Length: 389
Ligand code: GLA
Image 1 (spheres, helix red, strand yellow):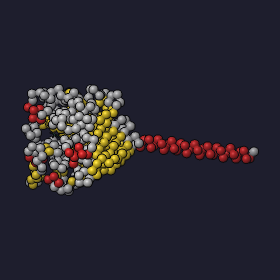
Image 2 (cartoon, rainbow, N blue to C red):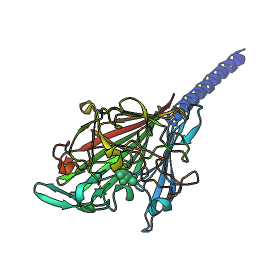
Image 3 (cartoon, rainbow, N blue to C red):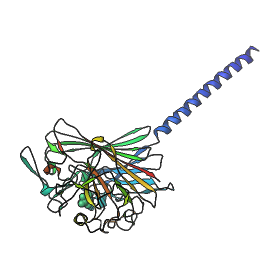
Image 4 (tube, helix red, strand yellow):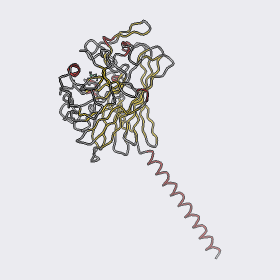
């Protein structure tokens, strides 16, 4: 009798132990699954002619969004997001291999710095000292120079949390690199979240007074079909004003009303509906290639624009802390660059929404300042958020 009692006692203890171990395992599984909702994976992407190793990081969430970023130029090489049927397709122009980026790229998906956009004649002054930058766009400086932030290898580190995965890219630009004063320590962090948003957080510090204006140069085609143009994709911009330009695309200094012009995107309007209008500014840009002065500049990170593709149902919302956005309608794409899906990228097969300070700000003292002093921190944040309707 005593033996039977002991046997049952032992058995129940065993059952309890097994059960609690099983529960613990279940809990562990739950936790791991949560951590794995957004993942990040690293692969080799290629080597530059001077022996620099380039990696590709793939950030993936469980809502169907995947983002590929390479350490060369911090370039977003692919963003796959679902259409209204739930089919994920690539919505950014770019290439499949490093060789093509090295050969010729109109800044596809890249981090742009130190100064995104144009500086007239490549000259500016700080405290009475004149600086000369590369003249690489007609008579002007464009997008950081000959070897801008889009053409350097960034140092990468990863971070994951329950509902996000982040790729932190760091680059130290030396004093007078590309003609810019001060050593600029720059960090760009890409964060993919479960809600199909991609945050880009920019930070920089300097050891000498300098200028900074960082952005990302992704070309979107929300249809997922790069053989199509973006002309029927519907744009809204929360901007009452824009900056008219001269023949070389430098702002004239006028801050013009969008009212009664083809630059009024306050109501959702197809990109192509007025692009061929008889308008002096559209002619100068060869289409849209202008900076809009965004509303709500005192409101920090806010919704500034939306693009909707009626065919796929995809919606892109852009949030930023920046005062301006360069809306570029891919006018210089000319059917010579090879597309990822085969064929070539033709005129207006992608659009860019480059959140930034105004072009030529160092020479236009009425524009918000782009000066960064030692001891200060440059910080800027832009989010691309995808959904469908
Ligand atoms: C920017 C400029 C355009 C063009 C593209 C790259 O958006 O504003 O004029 O130079 O970059 O081709």
